[in-house]
Image (tube, rainbow, N blue to C red; front, side, top):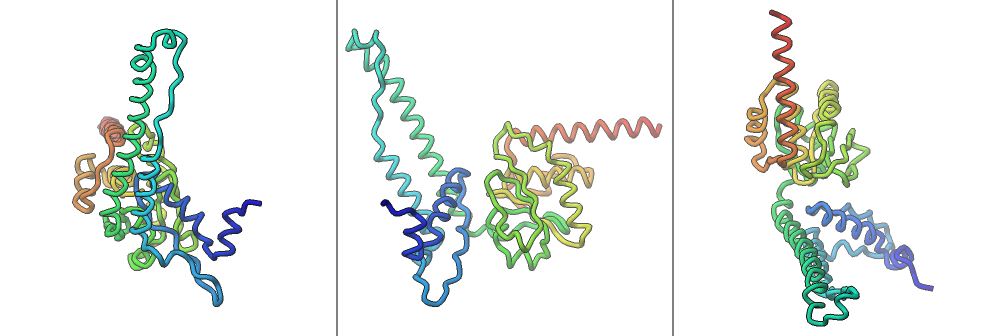
Length: 281
């Protein structure tokens, strides 16, 4: 009988291995390296865990090169020829194989580009674990900042707004969480969540606490929510709100689709102001 991962881990004490593999593949999917889940405390007489062998960044580099090696080992698949191509050997390679090979090469190229993006982001990720103060009671940051429990406690953060599709709360017993499950794509409708996110931030402030808004990098999704909050609560224009956020967090840069949604918000706010002015006149 072939031993399962759980039985192997039970014998060797590597209880976190399967969970860490899931964690890193999730990181590759999102094109960012989150810090690994904390290891379980070692009890007397318990076998040692593998976590001491590598620090988080070394484990990331290891997984990066493993995936790169697997991509290199993949063989180009054979592509079936049509009945017409079987009768003309000279055209079989140009008519059937080449389009398939080009499509395959494009897929591999995209995968390698994704891995390159991961390692580039990882270089700056290790130092981006402190949230940026936007205004009193409102912070903006990355997933690393959201995992930095001691700093969050020292900043009186009580609520965490996660704007990402695949992130679970890192400290569910210590903070109040709200998770908006969206991906960082131009066609993602983030505008539909503006009002409930504003209410969540206001509730944290009313209770005397502070809120951290974060996604993976703290660059696009979370920035869009914070900019929308400043526009709605302080009547800022899009340009004013975005400039204010960039002055506090220079990496801030919502994608083009989110910018269009913020422009729509700005137009709707201007329309309401015109209507109110007409009613008062």
